[in-house]
Length: 311
Image (cartoon, rainbow, N blue to C red; front, side, top):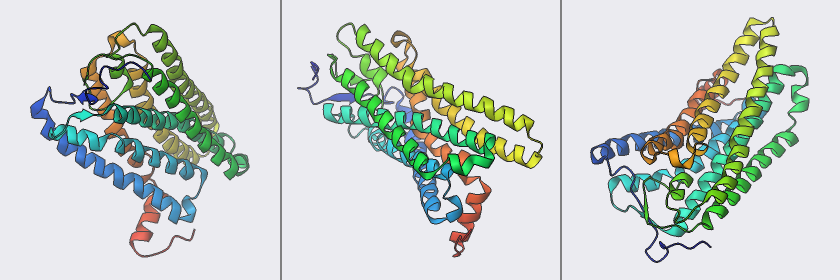
C-alpha cells in the first residue's frame, strides 16, 4: 500500500460544494429529485423487460444491464453527496474512498464496454436484418455482457491499484466523491510514470470503444440511406439516434474528465461535469432509450391496467 499521511487522520475531507453555500440547498433538492427519478426509471425498465415477453430481446437484454449499471454507480455516489450537501459529515475514510473509487471506475468502465455491445446489436439489426436472430444468439449476448463486466472491473483493478501505490499529501479533496483526477492532485511527488500507465488504460476504455461505436454507425448510416422503406428508415434512425445521444453524453463527459492533461484539470469545473454524468445522464437514459418507446408504453399500460402482455 502507498505511503499516505492521511491514514492516521481518519481519511479525507470532501469539500463538495461548500465553496457555494447558497447553492447547496438548491442542489440537494434537485439531486434528491433526480436520484428518485433515476431509481424509478431504471427499475421500471428492468421490471418491464422481465415481465413482458415482447421486450425479451437482445436490445432490452443490454438495456437491463445498462439500467442496473446506472442504478449501482449512482447509488455509490449520491447518498454520500446528499450527506455532504447537508454538512453533517464531510469526511470519508481512506478505505471508503478506495472502495468508492474502485466501484465507480468499475461500473463506469463496464458501461463504456457495454455501449459497444449495444452498438453491435443495432448494427446487426439494421445491416443484417435477415440474420439478426442468428447473430444475436442468447449465448453471444450473455458473452458480450460478461465481457463488459470483466473488462470494466479489470480496468478498475489496474487504475485503483496504481492509485494506491502513490504517496498522497493532504486530506482535502475538492470534490464531492473520490474521483481519480482529484486524488492525483494530492500526489506528493512526480507521478509521470504512473499517470502515463493510467492514461493508456483510459484510452483503451474510452477512445477504443467510441471508435468502434462510430465505425458501426457509419455502416448503419450507409444501410439506412440505401433502404427503400421510409418506415424502416424512421425506426432505425429513432433507435440508433437514441443510442448516439447516450454515447455522446457518456463519452463526451468521460473524455473531458479523464483524457485532458492533469495540469489543466479544473477541480471546480470538474465537479459540475461530474454532476452531469453521475446524476443527470443516469436519469435521462431511461427516457432517451425506452420510456418513450411505443413497445414499452404499450407494456406499461397493460400492466398498470391489470392486463398481461402475451405478445
